[in-house]
Image (cartoon, rainbow, N blue to C red; front, side, top):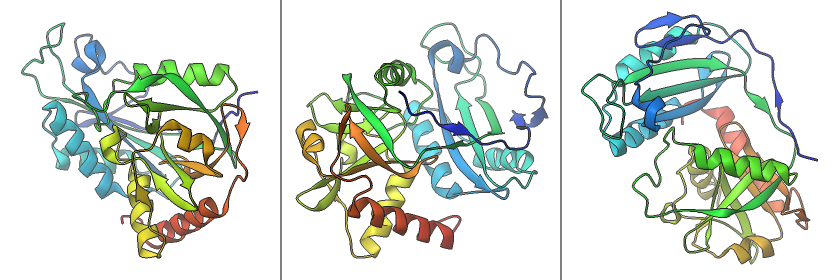
Length: 288
């Protein structure tokens, strides 16, 4: 049976679009918006506690980098104004979603001259179980793609992969890259044990540079337990004694089984240390 996430009830979501607060049910995107027509857009998701988004500076930096990769100009001050507008409720835990698209454009791949569409919203944040099952999908990430490493709104591959994984009882789908090396999940990065050490695919594998991944690597190094970034074949992930995935909504989540084959431990000692280090440092600084 598929492990389902549980959505936590929060205050009603708020939506800000291009400078104004609007009702969540109000139509706000034109039919010719390039984000809708061809998926020309970027986004970020932040975890919010008591009205304060975690690691906002890093998320905005990645939003800018992803937008630059698509040739979209980001107005950070406008985005921060929108964030302030939606974060009025002191909810214990919520999701902040920032989306920027190419704006109204001709129907086709060419982008028009209109300003980008900026949408900022709050909503519920999932509560994940203590461990998760993952499945390796038969499709690959292209580490040489024009959008490799960019957090774009073009998520159709992820939708198909995640449905495939769910049909096989897994809660997350993992991709290899075109070299049959470990890459990433649909919305997560993967870490695993090799010869007693913790490893994760480097950005050259084609994986997205997750903010949780980035912070965890920094914090483990500072605590004397550096993570090794290595390109390794899928067999290395299957042979590992333990593994976990990271993301904004999951933090550090142990993997119980890969393709229905359980790992020796879940969580194992490396995973437990990673989770403790991440939780401790995150509690010390809301914008590391």
